[in-house]
Length: 125
Image (cartoon, rainbow, N blue to C red; front, side, top):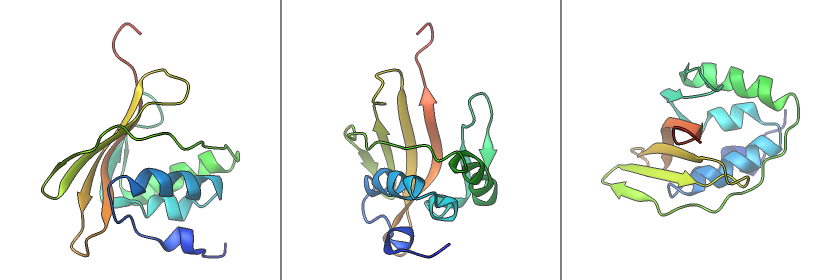
C-alpha cells in the first residue's frame, strides 16, 4: 500500500479525527485508520463487542474495509473540550442513534481517539 498524505496527516483539532477516519476508510487504509487511535484505545465495535488496542483495531478495520464500504462525512455536533480531553460526536446520516468518541491531545499537539462508541441507540429505540 502506498502512503498518501492523507494517511500521515495528524489531527490538529478533535474534529479532524472524523474527517480523517472517513478519508482513510474510503481509501481502504486500515493502517491509517488505526493510527487515529492511541495504543491502548478501546472501541465498542463490532456491536456487542469491545476491541482493545491499536493492533486489534487495525485488524478489525482491515476485515471491515476488505468489503470496500463507503463512508459519508457526517456533520459534527459541538465538541466538548476540557484540557487535553475532548468529546466528539456525530449524528449518523440514517438518523438512528449517535456516535461518540473521547479523544486526547498528544504531547505534539495532535489528537487521537481513546474511546470510540461508533454506534449506539437510546434504550427502547
